[in-house]
Amino acid sequence: MLRWALIFLIIALVAALFGFTGIAATAAGIAKFLFFLFLVVCLVFFILGISAGRRIP
Image (cartoon, rainbow, N blue to C red; front, side, top):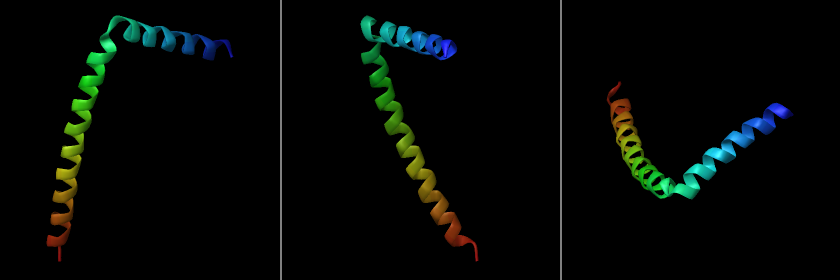
């Protein structure tokens, strides 16, 4: 249990560092951009996979 407590303490300290220094807003903006970028890439590969699957006899 002490191990889990230390792990959560480290996670809380990192979250506090991001939250209190203003890095969180920048990280959120980057995360939004990456989300939409990967969503578009996923849709492109999905469409390519469907079209390639129809070509196989």
